[in-house]
Amino acid sequence: KRQLIDPAALGFGSPAFTLDTTFQDSLSLENGSGDINLFEVRALIPALKWKHDSWLFAAGLNYTGIEADFNTSANLGTTHLHDLAIQLVAAYNNPNTPWWALGFLTPGIASDFSSVTSDALTATSLALVGYRWNDQLDLAAGVFASWSLGEATVLPALGFIWNPSSQWTIQATPPIVAIGWKPIPNWTFGLVAYPAGGTWEIGNSSDPTRQIDLSLWRAALSIERRLGPHWRISARSGLAFAGDIEFRDSSARVLSSSNLDSAPFAALALKWAF
Image (cartoon, rainbow, N blue to C red):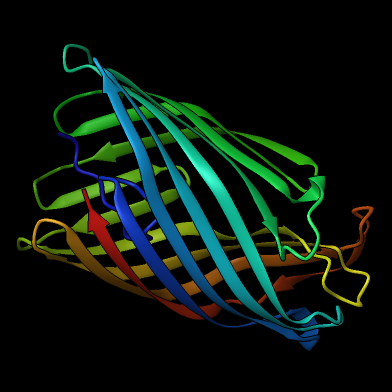
């Protein structure tokens, strides 16, 4: 069985109830025009799983809540942002063939929930076809697509999973890149890079801003401890980088935008794996 790691607690590997918290240090806007402070809580809740022959179908609920302090020209102050989504997964894995497939569709709502219109609707999807090259290496190719704030994005998705030994895992599984080392049972050390941020519709503000588009990447060192057959606890710390933010009005006209300086962050996660 191919070994997968999940150092960013994004739901890779075995299904698990997951609670993840991230403490983000101030992200300064370029030219010293303000900063943004974030505290994030994310929950992954597997709900259904059904297997038939070589096919696996699953569904779950994903929630992310962010308390954002905007010390910027957009007069938003402290804003609570929510992202609620249903994740639908289909996977094909037949031991008699080296070919496999994986796909997911995640429709959701991203908003401060003071006002919800069609601009709050979001969706992401990924379709991959993979090939087991040998006992250590899988290769995959496919398509990633997303929809938010009325805009669609379609990108090619290339990936691999390499287990050069029982201690090492190197994987590029969109949207993350990770290296994992398990020197002793129950302990896994990792290095991971993954996207963060999001898009939201907001209505609870006297400011004309009605849409927020925050994009950034995070890179971190991580450590995970396995506690018995089900529990996992992990911590990671690193740097948020390559960030930018746009504030838009209800017509999607950009009111202001800025690149964001890099800043450290830390995170804790607790899992109950099946």
